[in-house]
Length: 515
Image (cartoon, rainbow, N blue to C red; front, side, top):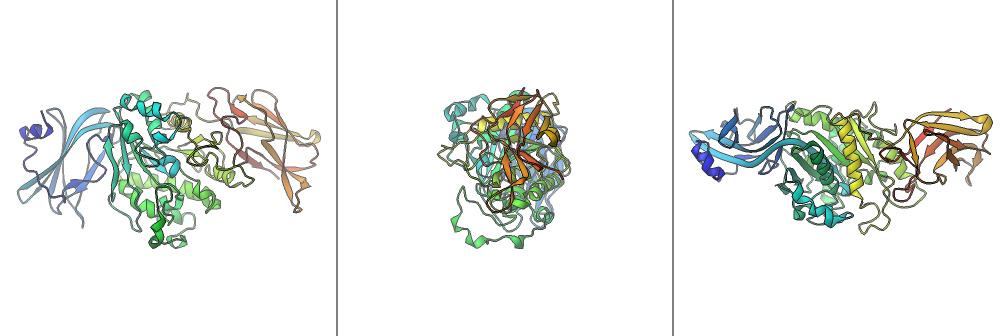
């Protein structure tokens, strides 16, 4: 029986109009996933001001819920909050508008309930399944995950906040090899897809994945004016103007402040989501670098508040937020990349932390891909990135504290000046996979560089016990800091020296100063 026939029999499709003024918002569609309980999914759209809208949820011939609201506001918006729903489906969702005894209906088919994850960032999030290692094998897996559903927003910018998306690249879809590898840096995001695969396989219920990303973009473009103000920035701080954007393409996005927040984030705020993952920062390694320890935490905090308010309190105000600590770019002596990796953690070196609660991080500095045809800034091993994010989601988003999701990080550093060494005690047992090769450095107040300044010098290291690394600094009478992996390209592919003993997760970089 067709959906239309079913609705006619139940008296829910009394009249169908071609008038597009009554519709669902652009990111509602057949095959979509709505957020399951304990949260309640929000459904909204546009209609004639003063009309009454009835939203009905059906499963087969059974009416699950029925809600009525008025169309309000200058542009005519209706919004309902569905009852809490267990995961599963498929359902039919029908919205009817009644105005002066005229009834107009729109409906959605094959609607599932599960968890909805939002995937944002720049080109490394935008990189599609067809661009990564073992692409043909990954694309062939599409048919195994019919209950993972995909949605991709179009690349749009605006100098004002948009209520709805201007355009959609990929409407809600069942995964196929075609829509997972549509073209380079189009859809669908490899990191987002493989992350969703892991979740679906573990949780055994539907997962909705929403991609909204654009290459070559700054965190400031994805931030609201409210978030930017927390870091002393305003829209007048932006150095480019919208009228100069003739050069834009898939990997060169706009950099004006808030223009992507306005067009590619703000329209989604009414959606109830489970959490978000983020892969961005490469552009900020060379612009507003020193502000990233403020702008990134401010973005997270503001997104959480905004999604919570937009969804009428249904999205958790502290929803889980995962991100990728940047991989590599070029082999150079610059410290832009280690600095931004550090700033990605609000200068703690690890997450969650007091400034970034309920967050999780995938370390990627050991995944460099020097021969990548898309540029070394785009490492092709997105499988490892997505898996490390998945481990964090298991622990933080789904509360499985048995999961080890963090690499080793120093708990304590004891310095013995008499013997010219220090012991760095880590918070877990270590797996040393390669020689240290000067990956530790100390800041020596007895050694100057060619410009007459005290400088960082390589420091030999060795494993002292299962959790302790000894770092020597002979020839230096006084040191004031130590750091690990403070380099744009600190090691070869999966050959950084320190990993966790159990999950083989890399130790992130760190820097520690003392008086």
